Image 1 (cartoon, rainbow, N blue to C red):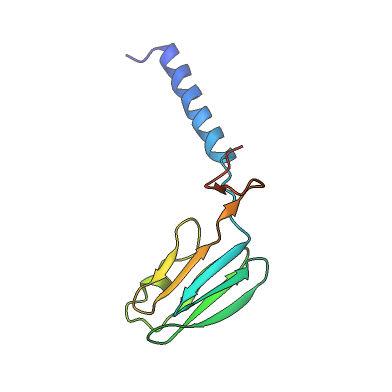
Image 2: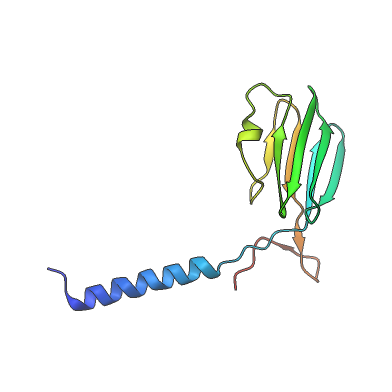
Length: 119
């Protein structure tokens, strides 16, 4: 039998979890890094553009828009990098073509790397 105190406790726990989920803001860098064959390219995510990168087996097209980036086409066979979607918190890697797309590291004023910020 469920008691009145159990209901209040469950509602309180769920409310706190929702509050923490909504207020957990993970800050991302303003710069993306594209590693390709023997080169590293840096772009800002504040501009909307399509970037063409030469890979091992062909070209990869990377679209930057709305403060995120994703691979829209690649020369690889299975297109897993295209299906990966938008760059959020894990890098997008096209192994057959040798292209890596990732955010730059966030560094504080003391030069230390920051994983995320919780407010």
